[in-house]
Every structure is written in structure tokens, then in C-alpha cells.
Amino acid sequence: MLGKSWLDEATSATQWMALAISMTITIALAYALSRVTEAKIRPVRGALRDFVDGLSRRSRRAVGACRSPRFSVRRPAFWPSWPAAPLALRGGPQGAYAALALSSMVLAPSLDGTDVIFSPRLEVLRLNQGRTALFLPQETADPLLIFLHPATGSASDSLRFSGFAEAARRRGVSIAFAESRGGFWRYFGANGADDTEDEAYILELRETLVARGLGSRGVFVAGFSNGALLAVQAACRHPGLFQGVGLISAGMPAALGNECRTLPTRVVIVSGAADPVFPVAGGVGRYPMLGSFWALDRFRTFLLSDRRCARFDQTRLNATRSVSARSVIVEQAAQCEREGVSQLFRVVSGGHEPYNEDTWRRLWGSEGLFLAPELIIKAFVTATNLGVEQKSSNLEIGAIASKR
Image (tube, rainbow, N blue to C red; front, side, top):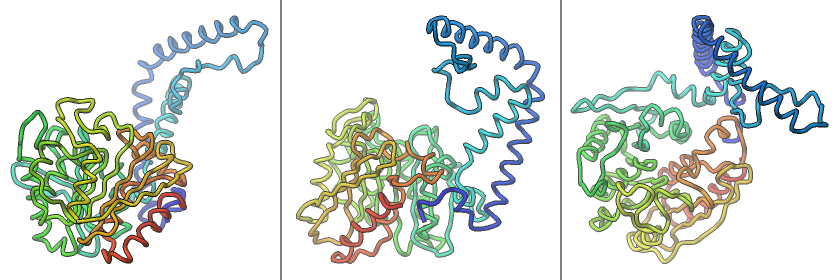
């Protein structure tokens, strides 16, 4: 159940053991570090304390008549709210120890995610030219999803923080987290070039896993930001090899769109209405090196034509407890001749990370969050009976996004 707190998600002794080991190691390292660095921290801590006390005294003089004891607080209003800062400044080695221990608790993923990270099934796939990928198989051999991380990201970051590992496990989907070279995926249109090395890597990764018997119920590819650009390139150029493509915070590169004739029958696009990197209006965004992109309206028209659909039906979801996803406009293709799913989720006032800004709130069990990984994977694996699909899809979307 998606709305549980992280304590309620512990369903096995393995999950608790993994978290306990992680916390124990972190606390031990924090204590050792605090003892070693105490002599070096003391003068810095003293200087910072004097600085903060000076600000406090000036504040008291400024307010004059206000003599409340609360004005003797040790930190000014602009001090970072991170809980480790006051502890590290004031507590000596014990303070640093407690600060890092507290940090480890805040940084620890949900127990559900810990179970994924420490899964004995996690594999490192080694491909040609020294390329690698992380792979989490499920008990069933299919379906298969390949996820591409954003620029400056990595496969391990995506495994831990994207939410796709947990969503894939809940849906029984085997998932591979691809790894770029240098933290950036090369695609057609970046700097005006057409470097196909990364595209060939994705195809090799797919073939390696299919050769093991995976993907008989579909092979899907999805990506976030820069990763989504390569995902849509692979889907455009090899539509017969992928049954679905998911794009988060990305668009169709104009250079690629000119040659793209069709896409897989299942397409899910998640975008922020105020994304400065890939503007909804199209053209060149914040980073000119990325090239020019289609407007969302043009992409919508392409999808209607590709599946020969009559229109997009529009609904609105309200995620009242979400920081960034307060309202989501959902568009779903209707009356299509070709089976499949075409969905667009546009986060009102959402930026370049329309759902990922809520990652930590999701880990602590906040309700009403808009979770792109859940919706994308659901669209990939749901049966595609046209009459039933649209009714059940609308119901499930509402349940996932606003009833947890």
C-alpha cells in the first residue's frame, strides 16, 4: 500500500536486518571520524560560535525592549535547517557523532527501498567496451524495463532514489538501470551531432537480457531528463524492439522528430508546465547545447496520428499534500484504432523535476503524492483491452495519485 509510513513497510526480518547493519556501520564510522577530527574542529567551532553570538547580541540591541530568553538562540534565522548543523557545532565529538547518526537516519531510504538495495538478486551486468548496468530481476521472467538516469546521474543513484526499483518490484517487472559514460547520454541533436554509441549500448543491454528469457511480455524503456532523450531515440529508431516508452521531464528532439515515423503503442510523458530546460512551448530551453525540441502540442498531434486516435480526453488530479505536484493535468488518447496507451501528465507549476522534488516526503509516507514511476509502469503492464483499459486506467490513476 503506497500510503504507509516507512515503519509500516517493514514486512520481513531481512529488511530490518539490512537497515540495522547500514545504521550500525554509519554510526561507527561517524564516531571514529568525530574522535579523529575533534582537535581540528574545535577552533572552527569556537569561531563560528563567537560569530553567531555576535549576531545574537546585535539582534537583541536592535529589538531594544524585547528581552525574551528566546532571543539568546545560538543560530541566526538564515542558518541551514539541516538537523546536523547545530549538533556538530556544539557537541564536540559526541555532537558530531550524534549529528552524523541523525543524518544517517534522515538519509536512509524507506525499508522497502532498503530491501531493494540489499537484494541478493541485484546483479552487475558487464557488456562490451567496459560498459555496465545494474539489474534487478523478479521471480517472473517478464516484463522488462530499462531505465536511463538523468545527466550527472548514475545507475546506482537511480536504483536508490528514482522510485522505479520499488515500483517495478510491486508490479513484478524486472528492471535494468543503464549507466552512461561521463554522466551524459549522447543522442541525436545534442550539439548538432548524431553519436550512436549510447544507442548501441541500450540495444546490447536489451539483447543481453532478452537472451536470458526476459521480456516475453514486453520490453520497455524509460528515462528522466537527458536519459529520456535517448529513450525516445531508441524507441523511434527501433519501435519493434520496445513495446513502450516513458519520458520524464523531456521532449522530442527536433532533429530526431524529423525522422521518427512511429513509436511503440504505449507512451507516457510526464512534464512540468514551467520546465525551463524543456519548455512546453518547444524550441531551445535553458541549455542551447541540448538542441531544439518539439512543442508539447506537436508531440500530442504526433501521438494522435500514430495510433489513429480521435482526441485526448483531459482530467485533473489534485494531490493536496504534495509540495510540487499540487495539481496534475492528465490527458489520455481516446477512440484509437491501434491498441495501446498514450498518456500525458502535466504538473501545474512543476519545474524540471515535477515529481522528484517530493522524494523525501514519499519516503516518510506523505499522502497525496504524484508518483511518476508508479503511473508509468502501470501503463506499461496493464492489459490493453481498449474498452476496459480507459475506464480502469482513469480509476487507478485517481487512486494512486490522490487516495493514498
